[in-house]
Image 1: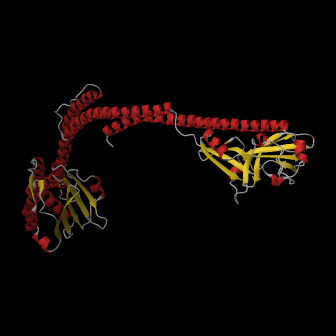
Image 2 (image 1 turned 45 degrees about the horizontal axis):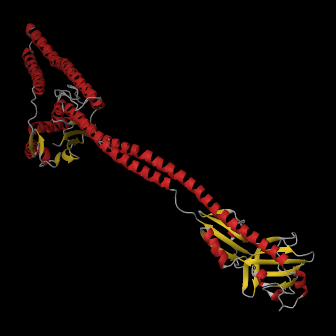
Image 3 (image 1 turned 180 degrees about the vertical axis):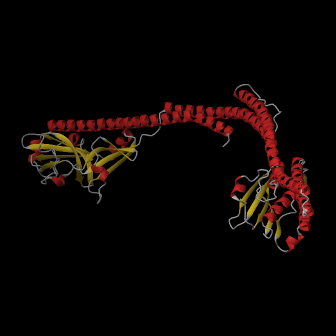
Length: 543
């Protein structure tokens, strides 16, 4: 990712993080608060229902007390025939069932269930431990079983009045209007596999399960039935919704503002960076004259000024370095030439001394000595002339004249020059010689001929391959042979003038090749082939 792209991304992230943190905090707090609110709302509904149950129980106890005072229950206990009802309807009409029983639970009289007379009641758990009380349990009459709220009160030491009301449709309707939830009635023996949740419920206590609250309103396992409600208070408090909306609006505004600001800043930074990159490209291309300017004051302006100062110092250093390199190169070249010229001067000096002595002593072999001295002097003079010609050729090498052409003519010249070697398959020209390339054909021909000549001089009968390839936007000239390869000294110092392993070599061949490669903007390297032989690879840019 680019620098300007990172600026945009960072600004968007900076704009997004605060709203997201606010939303997360509001979400967390609102969930916690709404959870507490839902729990309190469920508890409020349960409290309302508990008041209803307490009223029902109180009303039942009051009705039983009134009935105990308003009727002659001992008389009713003596008139056992089932068809007789000594108790008025105004008393019995308050109950769904009403019985008179002794302390053991034997029914002596019944208002609505005459079939129970003479039978024993299914007594509530608290019947024997309290003189009076209320309880919930299942009661049965001719219409079936009913969840009921029942109560009892003593009439005298031998009799108790037992009665109650069914928790029928009317009561359930009242419960539904009181509790905002799903009301469900279950009998304890209705299911072969009882719901384990029911055994964990306690009367009028909330039990959280699957995001909802379940409460046992009335009943239980002892009572024989369960009247439960599943409470799911829904909705969120309005001020939290407003916080959500405000946080979203702020977040959207921050993102839009950050994107606009990021685009503006990154655009300015991109212009400044493009300007500085263009300046560095010019410097890399050798332009040390064009000034570096910034669009605005600030860091980029200081950077441009610093780059301009660096270019000025680089220009001065380059000039000093070029001068130093030229002086050093001429010094090295002078020492090398002096050394190379001294070598032929020694045999010349010896030959002239021999010639002078023979003449002075009038030796009979003077003529032979003269011929031999002349041959030696001419040979050494030719050697010095060849060295000086190579030096002059290298010093006067002109810059390349670039042309966008193929190298078919260069190949034809090489084939004519080395037709015998090509015919004997000691020289092969491979690769694409027809592809158009921007170069100086004469200098490239000189480079290839020099490399072929070096290979032939190293080993006259070696097989030489000249290959031209275009790969990845680069142009490669590779010359390989099957000779002895380069010596370690040559590999260590391949392009040092007059560094030659041949007895009459000048060492300028590879140096000239290097100069041609560098003048074309390329590089040259030498190496030994793993299978034996030497190799030279010239890499040129494909313009």
